[in-house]
Length: 355
Image 1: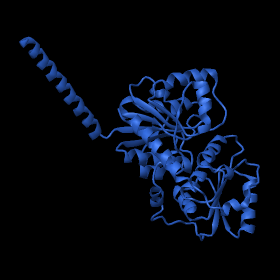
Image 2: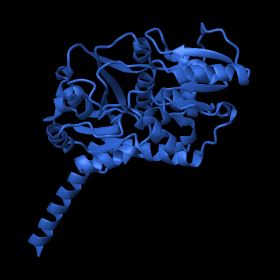
Image 3: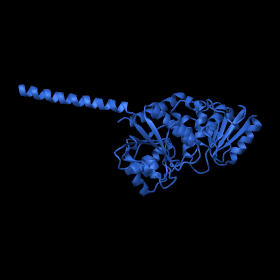
Image 4: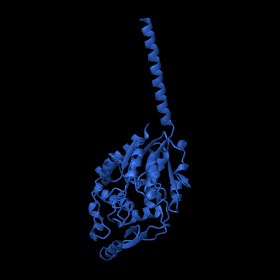
């Protein structure tokens, strides 16, 4: 009996020591700010893509982590803005420059990261460069870009193998779920675009002390376009003639800035656009809008966005002629749905950040 009690006490003592050590380890992890390597499209693309990087950085920082935006072959688009607002890591050649111990967790950020823009799509969309690393990895809000499957059978095999190493897989467009289920056998979580995860005060702070070189009063409709569209031009002429608004045509180019983009949307009466993020920020700032899909065929993003928030009546094909009065019809945003989706999306991030 004495031996039994002795053994029991020894076992009890060891178990308690292990529990204490485990709790100490958990507290250590909480005290240590983990570094998150945020991987996205190889090129620093445009205003929307940069605001998306900015937003995910804000959210990760709010949750107590240190975000590092990783990009390659950076162009002139707002690199200074990203450098000012988050930790920027510029890769000169390719993703092989990233080392296993550089970051604690790897995150594939949102936007069209599952679209084959170039031969490196396995790296920026599925972290092939980190395939053998013992590192937590997850995907936030990937987008196929198209409403059809664009991978070969051989590419599917590689993708399936790579995705086995991820703790979480989520997509931005509801319309992509069926395709992903069919070809990959995965049921991804649907999450919001990162730009919708943070309070709009962050965007207003961007222009708080900004001296805009654009001198125009508030009685204008903003045209924010990527590429040309004859119907946008026609709609602008109608708006000027029938609604008595001025038109400010903001054509995306290498001199475009995030500050100008936010300023123009905040101060306009309505928006005409063929940009996904032009549409998103119209919703964020509650501006009546009309959005055109681009002729390129990447229509799924706007279609899913319209369905998600009940604005399908404001999304048009590139060759359609919408009712001009939509530009003076206030948005009816279902904030209950919006806040529930935001909560779900943030909970998805929290779940995949915790060890």
